[in-house]
Image 1 (spheres, rainbow, N blue to C red):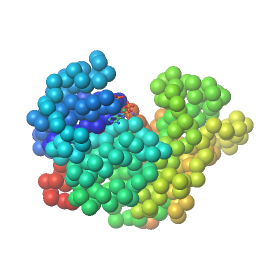
Image 2 (cartoon, helix red, strand yellow):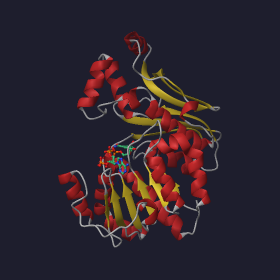
Image 3 (cartoon, protein in one colour):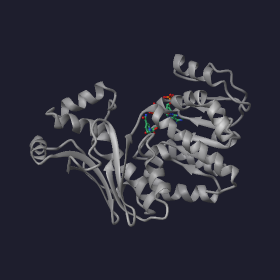
Image 4 (cartoon, helix red, strand yellow):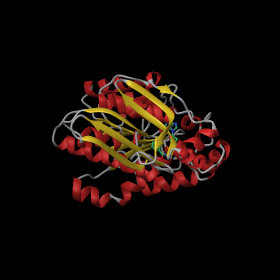
Length: 338
Ligand SMILES: NC(=O)c1ccc[n+]([C@@H]2O[C@H](COP(=O)([O-])OP(=O)(O)OC[C@H]3O[C@@H](n4cnc5c(N)ncnc54)[C@H](OP(=O)(O)O)[C@@H]3O)[C@@H](O)[C@H]2O)c1
């Protein structure tokens, strides 16, 4: 199985490490012999049609920060994503919720050249979900994105596969670990600025945390879930969104007195989509602390189920890519289409 890895940051490098450590298991249990034929970062590309030496790629990327020292095969192409032969294209570049680029163009190029695509990048899905699904169907290519919601926790698969045959009527949850950590610390009495600094010091918040604290990251995940699970055709602008920057500290005291806690809740109910801070009961199954994520699905016949797990992390997210890869391989073997 020939793979192109586009994006060699935390997730891309974790995925390559996971490929090395799970090579035996992948072959024995799933018949997968992965061959990474290209790795792409913002500065260039390493390419070999017979397969790159992944250990060397990782060492060079870690030492130099780029891939130029790798002895690549000659590649005469202005459009490597389209022109390189591969079964699977991984899109792992940074999430951009304004234009979805560069991920959107990468995914379009890969699907147009009939490659199966796996992404963990929320931007293209939050802004262009329907057209990307259509493009994948038109080209008879599979398109998987488990890691866009819940990191390694299989939130999308749980709803889509485990609740097959039932009808999910609504869902709500905590979809952003950074804000959940900050709100947990604020419930301990820390002011917002100190809780944010603590999250940054622990590596839970980016230097520019606006995507998280303004609620955009949770809104993007909500959009992906609403499209994929509920069959809606919605984008980011359909979400009524409030972040966590302006919560009155008194609200935390009031909530504690009522045995409640303030959480950034993302909810989808009857086409109403919102992300906002809400006081929830502490015995609600989605009441989780730290960086955990939790989602409760309400179904017509099976009632309510909650899935809880880590919402991010390089290795956790890489494990979702491996799941998608196995599913693609199995679908290829069964000659199943999208
Ligand atoms: N980290 C997590 O826990 C996590 C969890 C779930 C989802 N995600 C999503 O996964 C994606 C990757 O996250 P990350 O943490 O790995 O990000 P990251 O560490 O910032 O890495 C991003 C990578 O993309 C490369 N890149 C940027 N522009 C590019 C371009 N035009 N062409 C090719 N490569 C380009 C960068 O190249 P350079 O190396 O040259 O800078 C870098 O290697 C994001 O969309 C993120 O939202 C991350």
